[in-house]
Amino acid sequence: MAKDDKRELLLQATLELVAIHGFHGAPCAAIAEQAGVATGTIYRYFENKDVLINELYLSLENRINTALLEGYSEEMPFRERFLHVVRGLLKFFIAAPLEFKYIEQFHHSPYGVAFRRDRMLGQTESESCCCIYSELFTQGVAQQVIKDLPRVVLFDLAFGPIISVARNHILGFIQLDDTLIEQIAGACWDSLKR
Picture 1: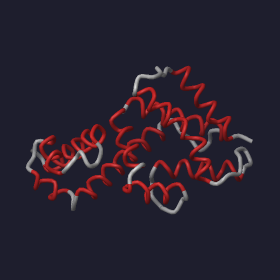
Picture 2: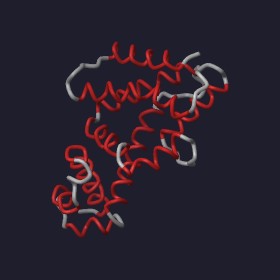
Picture 3: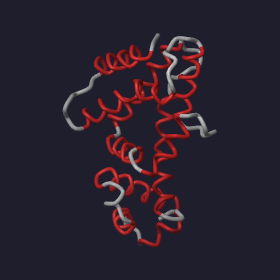
């Protein structure tokens, strides 16, 4: 098996176990067993479990970023860019329930606090998808098309509903289709627009 294949197997096993059982329910031995490798193999690719967890999160963030940038253009009117991001996030989350669950676990754990704080407050040079959000919010406030509120409040108003709706879809409480996704994106816009 190629070196990169084992690394990917470890990332996938971590995703599956953490999404289902949480961080404490995913010890290194279980991750290795799920990946079909020896426990020591983890340490050939990752310094420790914390590094593995953080690298998986960054990998998922890059996948989201790639999905959001598809069809995205700085030339689009502000409202259309915002709606594009909201639709893209919601579609990504409902198409990738394990990834959504992992991201939720990460954000609500000590692992995610520093990432979220730095990204929401624009204190990092990362090429993460949160930079798209930060740019949108900065431009929207400057152009006076969205409310002038603290960035963290803008994040909550814009993306809190998306997370809740995605969770409800994954749990089977609602069934999202393109029409409903469009209505939800519009409602998120309405919560921010001036």
